Image (cartoon, rainbow, N blue to C red; front, side, top):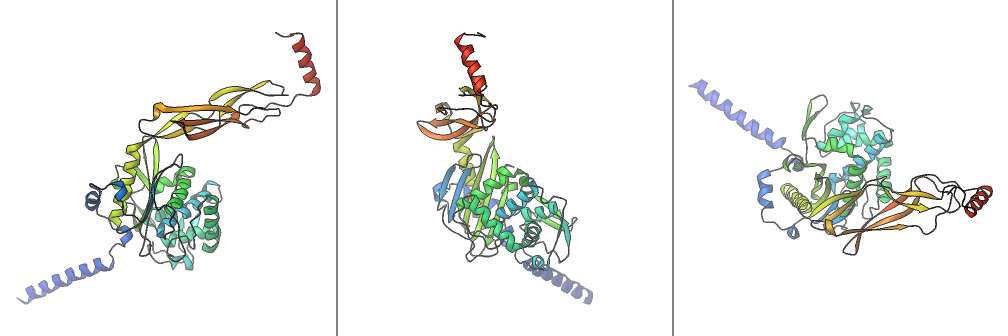
Length: 403
C-alpha cells in the first residue's frame, strides 16, 4: 500500500514538473504558429479588409507596387530590422571582405543580448555560414550582433552603415538604432521602406535565400535546434523562400515575405499585426492576390540588337544599338497583347563612341500608359576619324570609289 502511495506521488510530481518546465521554456511569441487558425482567418477575407497597421506588396524585378495601405507610416519593425543586417553581411560576403568560412568570435557585449537568442557565450567561435543560419532561421540577436562586430568592428559602427545604406536605397521613413530590432523607441521604418531593403537583398544577393528557405537545421554542431520563425516557408506551397519575421509588444507581429511562382518574385510586408497567425494569413493573402492578378513577361534579352545608328565623324559610319539589360514587364493578366514599344535613338551621335555607351532607349506602354523603359547601348567602340581619313573618305565618295 505504501509503495502505491509513493508511486502515485512520484507520478504527480513528474507531471507537475513537466507542466512547469513547459511554461518556463515555452516558445516566445515570435515562434508561435497554428496552421489551422491561418486557414480559418484566410477564408472569406477580402484584401481590402486586411488588418495590418501598414502593408505593401511589390514585384521584386521591377519594384512596382501592386497593393499598399499606410505604406509610408513610421512604425517599429522589431526583428524585421535584420533584413538590413543580412543585406550588409551579404554585401561584405559578396565583396570578399569576409567569407563564409571566417570565424566569428563572441564578445561579452554580444553574449549579453536579450530576446530571441542562441545563448552563445563570450569567446565562443563559429563560422559565418553557421551564424547566418542562426540569424535567418532563429532570429538570434546575440549572433546578429556578433556578425555586425565582424563586419564593422562594433554594433555602433554597423548601425551607421545601416542608416547610410537606407539613405542610399531611398528609405525616407527609416531610422536604425541597433542591428537587431530590440529597440522600440525612435527605431522605425515603414512597409514601403522594408520592401525596398528586402528587394535589394533578394535581387542583389540571392544567396541569402539558401538560408532563409531552410525549415529546420541546427547550430553549434547540432547542439542547438533551429526552426524557421517564418512558417510560410513550410506552409505556402513550397514557394515562399524568405524573408524575416519580427515581434515586440510595441511593434506587434511583423513579416517581410518573398515568394516566386512562374518566374515572378513578389515581396509582401505586413506590420503591426495583432497576432502571429494573422500576420502569416494576411501575408499569404497578399501573395495570393499578386500571383492571381499579375504576370511577369520577359520580352527582350540583354544584348539583343534593336537597330543600327549613324556615327558622325567616326572611322565607322554606323554601329548597332543593343538592349542594355533584360526587359521584364509586370502586367495585369490579359494585358500581354496590348504591349507596345517605341524606339528612341539620340538625334545626333558623334565619335568617339564607347562600347556600352547609351545611345537611346526603348519605352514600353499599355493603353498609352508607360510601364517601363530600357537603355540602348552601342555594341562597339567607334574612334574619331582624323582629318586626313575624313578627307580621303570624302574624295572616295566623290568618285564613288569602292562602290
